[in-house]
Structures are given as C-alpha cells and as structure tokens.
Amino acid sequence: MSINQTEATRLARICLPKILAHSNSNTGSDDDVPSTFLSDDAVSFKSLCRLWAGMGYIYQVTIAMPSSSPPSNNSKSKHKTSHNNFIIKHIVIPSPPNSRRSIGDERKAYSYWIEANFYQTLAPTLIEKYDLDIPIPYHIELDGEFDNGDDANSDNEVVEKDQTITICMSLLDGSPSSNRYNTNHIHATLSWLATLHAATWGSRVDDYVQTKAVQPIGSYWHLDTRPDEHESMSRRGWEGRLKLAARAIHERLRRDKMQCCIHGDAKDANMLFQKVDGGGVSVCMYDFQYCGKAPPSVDLAYYFCVAVGDINTDYIQYYHQQLICILQNDGIQSLPTLNELEESLSMALCDFQRFMCGWGQWGSDISGKVIKVLDRLDGGRMLNSEDDYREAVRREYG
Image 1: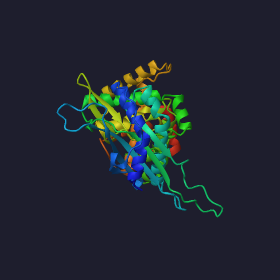
Image 2: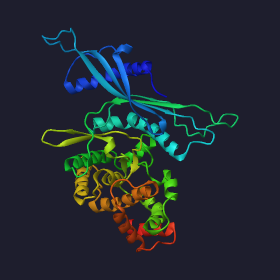
Image 3: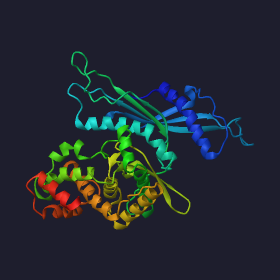
Image 4: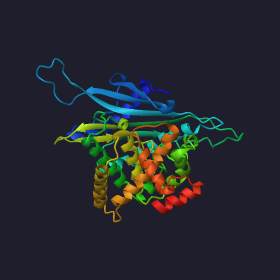
C-alpha cells in the first residue's frame, strides 16, 4: 500500500517539468527545464501521514538537483544544490468484498476518487482564473471508474481488484493557525470561501457534478451518507424534534436557490496561513474530498462552529459582501440577499447539529440557535411526522 523508491523517482521525473515551470513563472526566470531523467539518489521521500480508513499515505518528495545560480566566491563546492518539493497523495482502495463496503468506507473511498477528478477538472480553473490558493496539480493517475462493488463476473461473484489513485501536487506554504477570535484569519478564510463559491455559482456547479469533478452533495455529514448517526439520535426533547425534522431540513438545503461548490470540510486542520504586506494574512486550503454541490451556508455553518467559535453577524455580512462583489464581477444578475443567506444558514446549522447529535459534539454549542429554528417550525412541541415538518419548513423557510 506504500510507495517505494522506484515509484517516487518515476513520479518525480513526471512532475519535475511542471514544478520548474511554475517556479520559473513566479521568479521570472527563463532557464530551460532540464531533462526529467533523475537518478534514485536525487530523489528522497518521507511519509507525512496515513489516510482515513487506512487507504494509503501522503508523502513529501524532495528532488535535489544542481542550481543554475553560480556558486558564491567563498563557496568550497563548485555547484549549489536546489531542492524542489512536492506532495504525493497515494490512495489504494481495497476491492469491496461480496458483502460490499460499510457506508463509512464507501463514503471515504468515493471521496478520494472525487478528489482526483477535482484536481484534474476544476482546480486549474480555480487557480488560473480566480487565483484561488490551493495545491497545484502536477500529475494525476486515476485507475478507471469508481468501483462500488456492483460489477460481477460470469459466476456472479464480485471481481476483486484494488483501485489505485495517485495525486501529485504542490507543497503549500504557510503555517496552521487557530481562527478563533482572530479577525484577520477569519476574514481571509471567508474571502477564500466566497471566491470558491462564486467561481462555481449556479449552473456551473451542475456542470462539475455532471463531470464528476465534485460530489453531488457537498460535505461529509449530509444525511444521505449518515443514516447510522441519524438513527442513534435521541427521540426525546429538542434532539427528538430535530431528528424528526432532519429530512425536511436536508431537502430544504437541496432546493436552496443558492447552489455552488462548497469545500465540504472547511476546518482549521485543512488551512495554512501566511502573512502578507500591510499586516494582513492569506489562507490556502486543501483536502477536497467532500467538495460538492450545496448552498454556501453549509460551509459557513461548519466553519463558524468548528473553527471560529462564534456566529457573528459582522462575519456573515463580511462574507456576503465578498460573495456579491465576485458574483457581480462575473456578470451574475440574480444576487442573493443577506436575509436569504441568513435563512439558509439557519437550516445549515440545524443540519450540522443533526450530525453532531448522532456522532458527537464538536466545536461551539449551537443548540440555542437550533432550538430557535425548531420553535419556529413546531411552536416548541414535537409534530406528528416527518411530513408535518416538511410542511412547516416550506411554510417558514420556503
């Protein structure tokens, strides 16, 4: 399941021209890209972490090669050595057994396949047209279509074949940092999210879903992939009311007129920050396994809850201003109002709380905001059925 020296060198040879081309475009250098023939001695690699469900590893690869710059006068060596780094995300999805994978393993396996498609299809546009700070894809190897275990041979047995996915991408600069109560970091993140959302707004997201560049439903906690957590929710009190309302809330988010590609896992652990001129900061994000179609409020609800710790009206207004500015520059005519965003955010907070009620509480306590929504739907007393909550959601939230 891990890569070896031969494989690391092979991928380094493939990626080096793009690495140097990108480096030269940033420095303005006109140096020719040298031959991609590299010996094993020039390539080193190390494992950074293991992937979820044990489906592979992330590696950092370093290519050592002579620098084109002349050595200094007091240098004892004839040549300096430059080091070029990149990342390999190497995924091996085990063939599903006859009983198929668990829902959780199926969700993770499909997410890796989607991420490879994201880097092939959507990432170049986000980088080149919108200057979004994400890993630059250098090379993708995707082993055919996603195998969900439905294919069978003539004996009606599942054909067992592991799937391998390799994503080679740039090593991002920056440092992790807590967003909590840091306005500069929060604004940088909200601007990044607004750029992603605006760049994929409206019908564009449907095109990306069609090409399987993103998930048909964004986020890793949406109801269709979390039946176990939904089932384990309490049937009493406000959690019981939320349990019964969950399907109606999920459907409301699906029909929200604000649709785009969301990141789907916008937490601190997937962000790196850098200082910029003027005392501000910039953010870059990675991990696009759950990037998919959803209202932007789904990203905001998750981000505010798990990274910021505060759902501040000023932050919502700041995000809305950034979003509107980019949409207007893109020529979008029908622009979302602040009230529409806030109503959608109310639904998204309930949706995320539904997941946490079944999985475990994470981040700040948003139960008060959720109870306020439930009170609006049912007057403080549990309704009789899911259909009753569907009617209430349509009445109150459209």
